[in-house]
Length: 480
Image 1: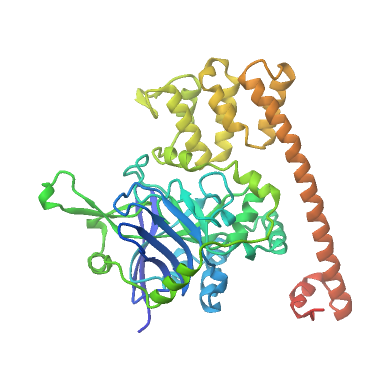
Image 2: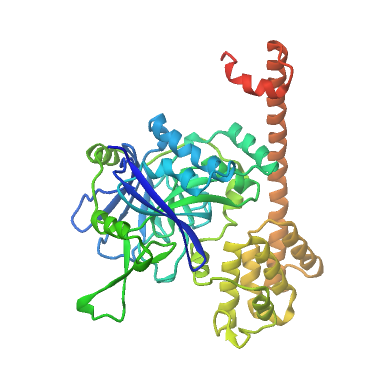
């Protein structure tokens, strides 16, 4: 019988999303249990029969324990049928404006039966610890922010923004990166599709090269994020012995029971129980044989540099508790106040307020973060926050940050205090950054020249009138 996807757009507390009911799903994408020892807890994220990565923890009964994550395989080994379904989503939604439901349905059909929330979200292409995501999981290690329950965030809603790759690093193609960078320069920015797996982490099903290109070109990388709707919220005022479900939840949103169509609530109650995919045995066998992945592919040096500047897990956790900061509230913080309009902005503690504001702004709006952080540094009356903010700015290679630190370094020596010391460190890093960038720009110019020469050769040998036509014809060039 064919898979059926019924979906509707919803908006709860300003969070717009698609609620999808998948019936008779193909079971080609999801998470399965693969426990190997008593008391252990191991999950495997799979696509078709490939165990893409494993997630485990030593204490199966501690929901606040972070997990050990390791990449095992990649979707490049899957069938063209599945890869094609995954690859069309980003372009259809972000470039061709086909709408959320229509764009994501080919992937929803690949899932197991159940309810799902789908939303558009800005993602962070790192492992939450300043490492570029695509090759951050080659060795099994504990990943901060991967616990099922986050003690910092608590019950607040958040978007699981950090990424785990589903393609192995060996799939990286420099030529594809160059083409995507050229498209980004023209304003043609696509996106990806991701599946929430644990804590603050989502598996990137498609969009690895786009994520990398966005990072290198200082553009936001957005995804359609699919979250299984598996959890419930109980009425806290009810008698503990008579718990009453008042909402269904996932990290992004809580949906009151009264807002759910009756058939979807029934679907949730029926399908909430874990079900094994048909390929369970094959996936578990492959996962047991493969322990890590390696790759000799070299990513551009700027990738690692820029990934180190991204918000980390602690920043994202802190930011999750803030819904919005107005310009008036930021102005009050810059004036040394913790209140605006007689209400606490973030915290009664000023230092805590500034650190949380920086975390929120860097996660939500980088331009506002830079303005706020530099305004703090230029205000001598806010010296209590200077060391923290200066250390935050140390890893950010940006002209406005360089201008500020250059002025400090010109006025004061390296031993005249912690801010001048950081300023001199920054200037040294800036020079190293410029040298790396110069070499990469030269390599990019050389690559573009070679592509132009190839297209010109196709045009001349095939008698094609334009380079645009040569681009369409280049796939027919016989390999030497």
